[in-house]
Length: 366
Ligand SMILES: NC(=O)c1ccc[n+]([C@@H]2O[C@H](COP(=O)([O-])OP(=O)(O)OC[C@H]3O[C@@H](n4cnc5c(N)ncnc54)[C@H](O)[C@@H]3O)[C@@H](O)[C@H]2O)c1
Image 1: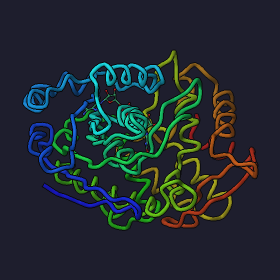
Image 2 (image 1 turned 60 degrees about the horizontal axis):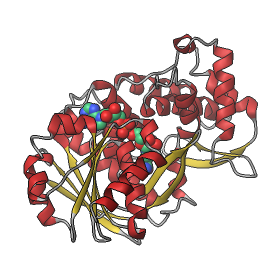
Image 3 (image 1 turned 90 degrees about the vertical axis):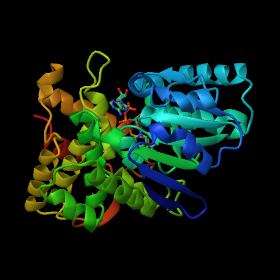
């Protein structure tokens, strides 16, 4: 088992990475701070697939888990209200520890509930997607979506521990592994030489290599979040590729179903930003060629076919552009994009230049 300590300046917590976390939860509970009763919010898929491994944990702690689908449209007030009602009905006190077992949807929702319950109960994250293991479990951001606005309502609430099961991550479907890799590539682009070296080599993914990526990624995230928990400076760099990426992800929802996973949107968003950086003279044509080859290696898209959702490219570009400018990170002085002045050197670029952003989006919409 690998134990790392995440030190964010004002707060620190342990991360345990091991091969069979779910089957050993009773032992882990002894090691981490769990003062009161345990309440579990778990992804339906994980519950169905792994409940026999967690049976002893559930039985010993008299847990009747709250099970829900890890879908974007479950990250709502409605779900939160149902959980509050369940907590209230079960007389869960302030010293309750909420275990969030699932991907980013479950983590964000459970984190939000935990931050509100008696103004803050304990929280333990057990991320079960690669994206949540390398990104969303760390940093304390919690959120629910509201009306058409993603992550509109939320808080900062940190876990007391993070438990990561590397064997479970290895069993993820390829699309989920790819989605998580987009964030790993992002860390490389922001300046992580060890990760850059590793993703550039032909490696067969194993449970130990995946555990190494998770560890390296979390250390990178710690670097940007440290002393900037409320996202006023360095932490903003982590949004690299996300402003346009989110707009692509949400503009390509078809009949209420996503056609791109979060990481796939981020991959396209990073390519769009590379095109903008080249246009402004900060990156070279060879850089985007290199990025395309890396994304392709990890099964990530390098463009999106607009006819997938029955739209002409011009129409989809327009809708992505509109959504990009609606992004909440827009300030009164313009859109705050993260650009790179060479690989590994992020900076904030404020702009209202729609033509420039459109040029970037056109790079990835065919
Ligand atoms: N708080 C943060 O800092 C932060 C950062 C990035 C993303 N997010 C949020 O994370 C969410 C996306 O998270 P996600 O990509 O983890 O997706 P997700 O939670 O929606 O899960 C994706 C799918 O994978 C399934 N799944 C979960 N674990 C699995 C497993 N082990 N094997 C097979 N299937 C599994 C789920 O049931 C779901 O269908 C978004 O809501 C986003 O806003 C939050």
